[in-house]
Image (cartoon, rainbow, N blue to C red):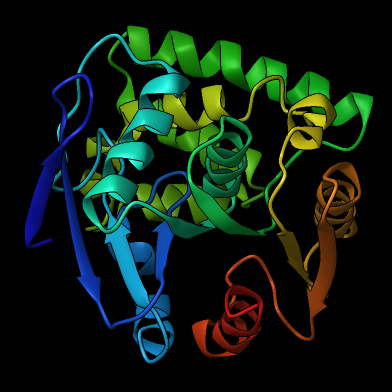
Length: 259
């Protein structure tokens, strides 16, 4: 990241931009930095000015206590102001929940596209999210960052042997370093269910996307987002999972953002 701005509470946010045209800001999800969505910036920058940033508490950005979801919305407001005053947003996974909250808050946003925002679609899943939130809070309060990462990986459905293998890998230290931000994504997701009242307040076009090779509940959640906003569209991408391929996703986003 080669640029920095200050958010309203004084937190330093690191970002970079590429390309020319109307602005598109990419919002990463849990256990991610701007580098995670950077591969998507390259194809999109052929038609847009694409902005990638490290959310607070991760990467090269700072952090300021106490955390509140409103601070992350203010971060996006500061970023949008710095790059021209108006932007479209793309959010992946829980980053999609943040992008939707930003649009609902009245930020100067043209369009919002989200990929597989993981809203729970059953009472059983909602209860699991609540248990996860309680255990995550306890692990972080006790300084057990590794356990916090494990909790998140289990929530995503990874097998136990894969999780234990990850814990022995060189990447584990980096995962532990941003573990506190898991609480931020948990807060952004609210109670874990589809926030229909919040979504109904969004007045700009929204594209909710899912991969047709992802679990059915992911597609159901994306469809629910599209149906809950006044100007929503739902779309699936053939052969794609939660780890969507940038070259498959980029043309779909470009078409939507160019409207």
